[in-house]
Image 1: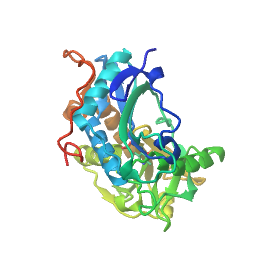
Image 2: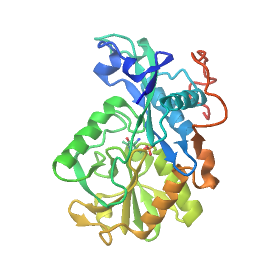
Image 3: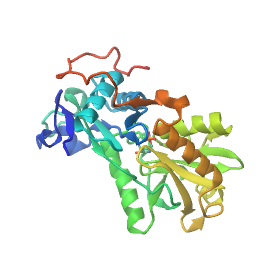
Length: 328
Ligand code: PMP
C-alpha cells in the first residue's frame, strides 16, 4: 500500500515524512488537529470526504485560540486532501489527519508567538472505532474534562488529548467501552473523543458548548438531521450525571465513533437496555448521508474521484484571504 503525506509544503511518501526530535510540538503538545472521515460508497465506487470545509475551519479556529497560524485556506487544504487520497489509489474508508503545529526545533521556549507554524496532513485506512452495531457500556471518568481556563476543549489541541487518553485508558482497563468526562463542577461534558446525546421525552439533549465540549461536526450534523428529517428538536444545555441513567436513549457522536449507541452507564441500563428506535433511525440516516447516498445532503460530501485531473505539485504557497478560515 502506498500512502502519502503533505509535509513541509510538498506531497511525499508517508514513510519519508519525518520530524526532527527537537520539534517544539513533540515536547509541549503545541499542535491543533482534525480527524476527517473519507467514506467509501461501494455502489458508486466513490470516496466522499465528509464536511471537510467545516473541519478545516475548526482547525483554523483551534489554531487561533492557541496561537498557531494555519497558512492555507480550508479550500486549499481540501485540495491537498483530495490529492493525498487519490495518490494512495485506495478505494476504502479512510481517515484524514491534518495537524498544524509549532515546527521550530526549540527547547526552553514557551512563547507561542515566537515559534514557527507548519501544517502536515496524511490519510490512512480506518474502519470502525467503536462498534456502532452494539450498545456500548460507558463509565463516568474519575478524570475531569479540562476547563476552558486550562486548555479550552473547544480547541482540538494535541496536548489536551492527555486528558482524553487518561479517561479512555481508565475506562477500558476497568472493562468499559468508553469514558464520559464531567466538568470540574460535576456536569456532563463529553466522551474521550465524542459528544454525548440523551433522548428524553422525544427531545434530544446534549451538553452546551460552555460545558467544555468540542463543537462536534458530527453533533451538528445529527442536530440538523434530527430536526429536518425526524422533527426532533435538540436542546443544548447543562446536563447532570444522573440524567444519563434516566434517559430513554443515549448515544455518542464523533468522526471516528460515527453514531454509537450507549445502552449501559456505570452498570445501569439506559432505557430498555438495548439500542433505542430513535437512535437506530438517526444512525441509518447518518450513515446514508456520510456515504453520499442521501443526495439531499450531498453538499456535505466532497467526491475524491472526479473527471478533473489531480492537481499538479508543488502547490503554490498562497496566503489565505483571512486567518480565520473561509467562512469567518
Ligand atoms: N469531543 C472530542 C474530545 C473529540 O475528540 C471529538 C472528535 N473530534 C468529538 C468530541 C466529536 O467531534 P467531531 O464530531 O467533530 O469529530
